[in-house]
Length: 278
Image 1: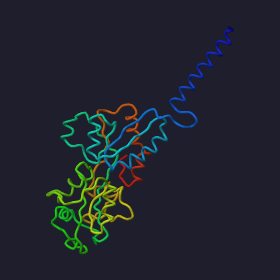
Image 2: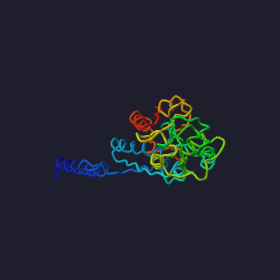
Image 3: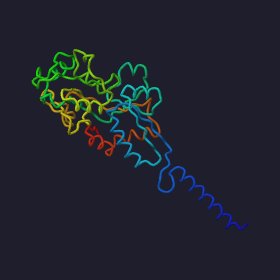
Image 4: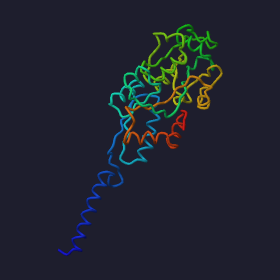
């Protein structure tokens, strides 16, 4: 066979193989074949941030899918520690006992958040001090008129034990007592907002990003729960927003966590009502 013809055939074969490989990795016809999956689970506070991250990151990074589920901060930490998720989401600090049990856990802080105290439409107040909030939740005050509000029996809503939002509330507000056992327990920030907004005499707490036009968020000691006041430290009911990994992240997880601190991602944090840190 003529050497020129042999070379042409070889080039054609290589080109065909390359095209087939590209179709497999990147997808044909303008669609992408999802070749890598990053499993992320945990805090419902971080869920909207990571869901927005997913939308943007998958646009920018062909072949990578972020799969995001909830379950609470404790679930996120445990899932990362046990290797059933690539990344855990937690809106509370990793506890010393958790670090003792899993010393290879690595902390990646991507933002900050305030926890706002929210009330129903009949409360009749816009400001409480920390001790008054604690007094409501521990049962000292049972009627809104005892703290300067309208006449109405206070209905308390609390988060589940695995919640990072509850951990922040307990560690910054419930300093000397526990929440009454009769409090109504809800499983997420969204459920808390709906429950309090739907009960004229309700009280509860949510992350800043869950405050909407229907929600009444109280000033605490005259300080409003805003991004600016959390960033400055003036609003003290606040916590870090954290992603955790088992050991130093590798591969696509490492690339994603690096991206999470870039301007595009940090802008998303701010747009959702949380506090960017980079």
